[in-house]
Length: 292
Image 1 (cartoon, helix red, strand yellow):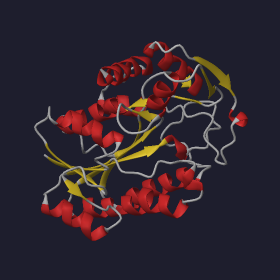
Image 2: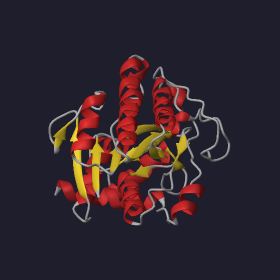
Image 3: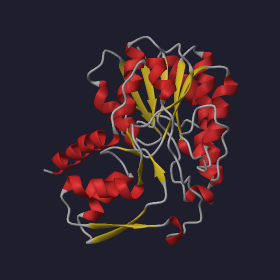
Image 4: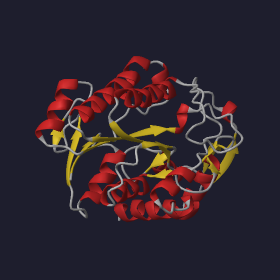
């Protein structure tokens, strides 16, 4: 099967690249920046359609996205261009070529005021420019009429790129004390676990089970809990102190509660989802070994 991975130089794209060698599929990694198999500007509809058609693509795996939540408040047009307009282009290319679009969305489509884990049919209500742009991307997929799967994730991390886990790992090696918010709760998503899910779906011939799905690792924690665990695993002698979101105003509202209900994805695809601490230990081991 021919699979086009957009955002191939990002942390999720790099995680796919890591797993691609162990499959029988032909992966083509594309990014707006050089470094992959193809330079591709996903905001250019003609370029996207040409890439899909000429390479006989069966699956478009969209790992591209504008992810700077704070900056999106002042760059909302750019966030929408990447998170919505480019997604609409990929959906159109998928429809024209009878390919399946697998699109990655976010917990930020919700406002974070629920007291229970969010299910897929919970009414979206984003409170940030980033969340609005990601919801617009979801809508573009649904409106296109293409074959699709949307996976909503939260707190993505890996050993690649820039993310919370790598930031805390690096800062805790240098600083004696870190203050981390304890009043934002969710569940991390290890990029490798999402990649495994998608590859298993493709291998098992389940691409016809289109729909919107929640996917994170199992369990619940705060950013403080996650930071504490990172320091504990790494052995860094850094004190992690809990603080409140209000102590560090950033000009952007973030969901206080980002726990997603994974019942649908588990029942539909028959998968077991790893516990967040187990996946974190695996990733931390990779990070530490990569430094040796």
